[in-house]
Length: 149
Image 1 (cartoon, helix red, strand yellow):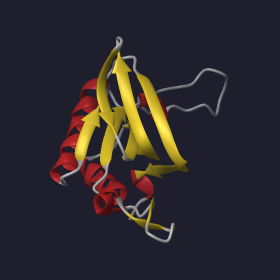
Image 2 (cartoon, rainbow, N blue to C red; image 1 turned 60 degrees about the vertical axis):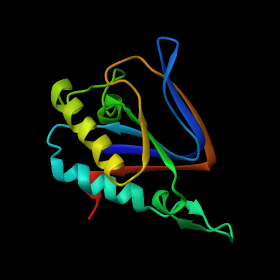
Image 3 (cartoon, one colour; image 1 turned 135 degrees about the vertical axis):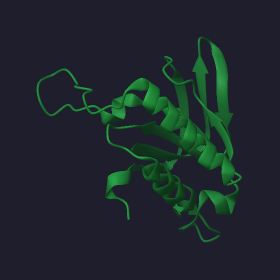
Image 4 (cartoon, rainbow, N blue to C red; image 1 turned 180 degrees about the horizontal axis):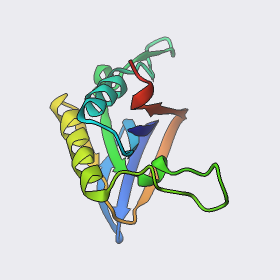
């Protein structure tokens, strides 16, 4: 699984002109599911993201996690994160998981975030979405579950 996480002051996602998810301070998480990803990858990634110390403490140092600040999460599926642009000019999505499997894994990822007590909002799987991200910093990280301990 690949996640692009952005520390935000606010973020929202709109589908067909209607806001379907909106948060204040927290993380905007774009999530891509690759072929071969397993349920263990979900837990590994959720744990890492929720506990990653990327929010400022009283001294302005990145020392606090999403859980520490009681921040929110907006989780949006983005299959293009598993795309490959190394060859040619058109991206290949051969590494992206099939939609039915990816949707189930995405929904499980969201449930695990919610189980941590994080106020969690989502986009709409498979829909064309307009995402407003007010990146705080900017602070952005790319995490690949296959590279995490």
